[in-house]
Image (cartoon, rainbow, N blue to C red; front, side, top):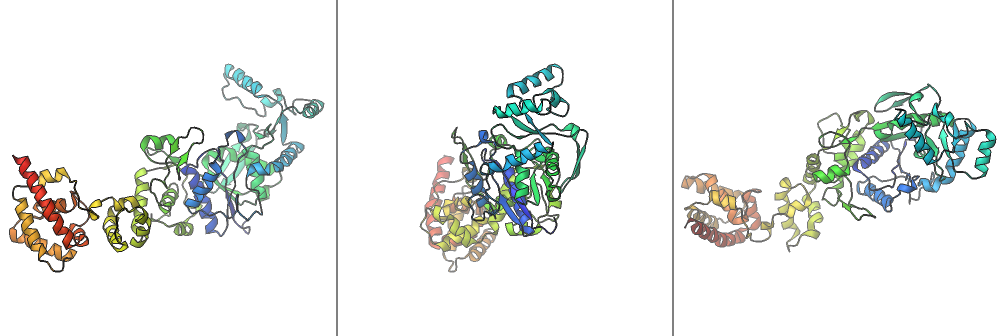
Length: 514
């Protein structure tokens, strides 16, 4: 196995939008494969046709693309060596292996109807056995090829009577396997039921299909969510019963992504309740037309989303938190994945986006926001605005959120005005702007120097002047360096705003004082 090329698969079911937990599973598979120069495969497990949702497969593929998780094999790709990659298109393969299990005595035909099974559960419940299972004890009292004569079984099959194929679970055997995250797992077969592996509609269940496909596709590592851990012993037995033990992949079951309060698995309802997305892309339900928000549409960078997901269950063992996808590939390892659930923090997801925004160049950010910029300004000017806003922004939309960079502000912060504007303020700001107007350089450094000399000469504190200057020029109570803003606006615009807005605030003060 060690000499074999690493091959992993992400195998979602197209039953709805891809949860961020599903994307994290895909991400860990991708990182593991790429670190070891292996293959990352997408396989669509659509055996449950009753739960199939139109558009879900397309959504899955688009989500992977947005996250930068490039498939080596999968639906629609030219590399079809181990295809097809939709289980519904592999239907003809599974019956052979189900029959092989029956022939070897490791599975059997079951003719029990849904109604009969439900009646058995109800009877068991009345007998104070609420957790009734179809297993090594109960199977002999049911209608199957173990309890019926061979003639009766053959007759039912010839008459095309509906049946399922169930695995024949051995009595009192320990199933052992090593999990790359959790260590040794041991389960006794007395605690396992005879799961259906082939359904009456001619389709396999997940249990048989995933084992057969993993074997045929030469999958070396199965990295999936911990919800599949209880099923892993069954899969181990299927490898044994099909004589594929030497080809059995290594297993790694990932911890859950938990609610922000840490109490239970993160769900769509939590996102709806607390106001954050749980899906990578926006999704519209084809039946209800209900729209669920996505990280992409909320303004998150795909790189920051992936970075955030990587840290939900994994850490590099260092203080480094901000990673590119390439860096994640280099540092990722399964032995740094935790066993316990990872609590999702919506604020932390914003922090990751903020960090990735700050690491982007101003020119790249200009290209990003140019299309949504409604003002006729040069790229140079836009780059300077971005430079001032960058440290205060979380999303790219925040970079253009202050319109005072582009036009004279008419709105203003009333709290700042009420607190800071005094009877002598107009006189002070007029004197300052008079001195500033004589400044021939008019840079951020020079305007700040003029300001300092002015306050020192008047023996007044910065707090008596600076908030009012900001109010006049921006209408805000706070923001980036005012001197940098003044340099960017230019002397002409600064003086224009002084002339119009200083008089406005002076008159407003007099009006409110009378």
